[in-house]
Image 1 (cartoon, helix red, strand yellow):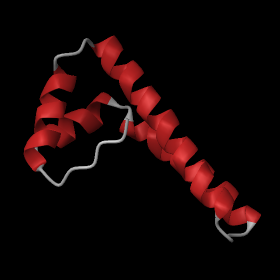
Image 2 (image 1 turned 90 degrees about the vertical axis):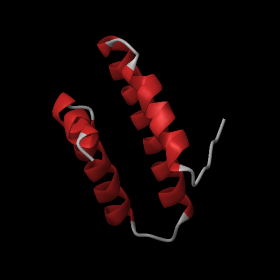
Image 3 (image 1 turned 120 degrees about the vertical axis):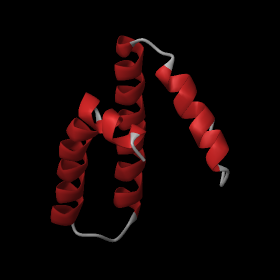
Image 4 (image 1 turned 45 degrees about the vertical axis):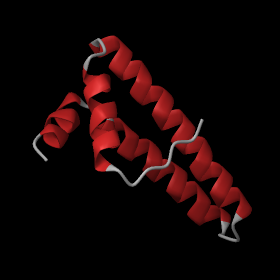
Length: 81
């Protein structure tokens, strides 16, 4: 299911719901989200006319960034916004 919204209250409500999950469930959720996003990026890049080196660099960058996104410190930083 794809949810598109411009309403920040919905995003906040989803984050509040996420916070009620156990640490393990949060980690699994973030891993699943990361995998789905990676598949979307791969699909877009494969359909585009970019060269193979650029495609590979984008995929490697996404993987490296995802490691940081899954850190507890990242969640803490977002809570301060």
